[in-house]
Length: 320
Image (cartoon, rainbow, N blue to C red; front, top):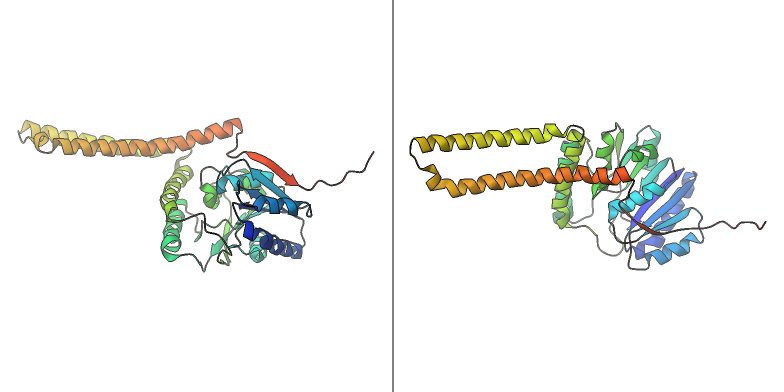
């Protein structure tokens, strides 16, 4: 069975066209399917339109979150609810063409665990989207060892057992292939079409660049040092120890021979040392915070989202 997971937030103009095109494609595939739409606390009429569609389609399920938790949490909610052997995620703004679903499924049927979409011809703005995305994709490929050219797209097909090994936090949904590679998942890339939004504005912009860079560092740490953190923090500690020893030794020699180094450059040297040490401490604290946060959620079985309601058509029950 196929499970289609679609996170949305204020996508009222796209919902009906997306539903029509999606159901047409899924009917042509001739496999059992379900459509799970996760409404991430939309403020327009998105949920009302979906609630009406639920009454006419028993294969449609709508999950409404209590507040806007973000795309990663919305995808996680859909993945948790999905019942299919293969799960396909795509955006609800029609920038992902449902007609590309058979191409993703073909790769899964070839034996791959993840079929990741590749927006070969992007229609986004070059300055705010294309160039930062290209740089981020290159860095992510080098950091994770997964040779993908487009980590950012949501349009992917997964074997359900692969997603069971992955817990999503923060904004790491775009790095699911990298996280899955830790467990030996086989990943293929499939060219997909990329069309302009039919209405509304993108929820992402240039301001996400720094967050993406932080996520890349987090993924690098989780993939390489999650089970051996001392290898990471030990190297930084050793580097700091050696650097501090050299500085103190140099100052001691200069003091012995009466050069007066501390009088000339003392305040600047102390400030530089404190900034270096403070930066390393903050960076290390952030990585440790990632580990502790995962321990907190996973040890207690907590989720990163809260569901307000779930709508699906109830089949009529015959009277006793």
